[in-house]
Length: 135
Image 1 (tube, one colour):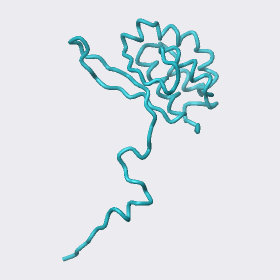
Image 2 (image 1 turned 135 degrees about the horizontal axis):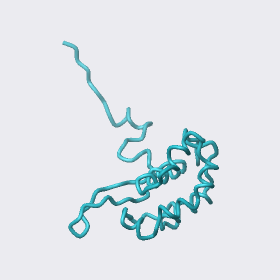
Image 3 (image 1 turned 180 degrees about the horizontal axis):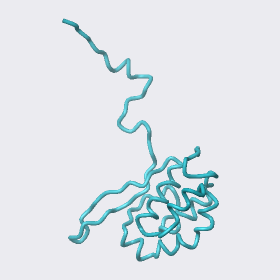
Image 4 (image 1 turned 45 degrees about the horizontal axis):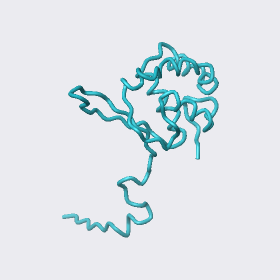
């Protein structure tokens, strides 16, 4: 299920992923509620992430920790979240929406489905036939 990533020296376990998701107010990888930068400010997500920096350092390669765990802000914590959930085949989908007349970026966890809008590899030749003419 999980795979190595160029950012990590150790693969994050699901227990830590749940701890990380909790800092965003999410209950687990299957929690597909939308959240915004304003939501992150309300629940003090940056402060919550700052409290788990020692645990984050246990997973990141030292050179990556210096980049991602310094000067933490909302943009960086979204990047951190993206990197950690990617290990478990999830992504943080972002979409700009107008909420109460103000443009905001909304975020949501989504399972990465490799077959999304693509034909199954074994059936490509059955479904598609081409005629090539040289003239």
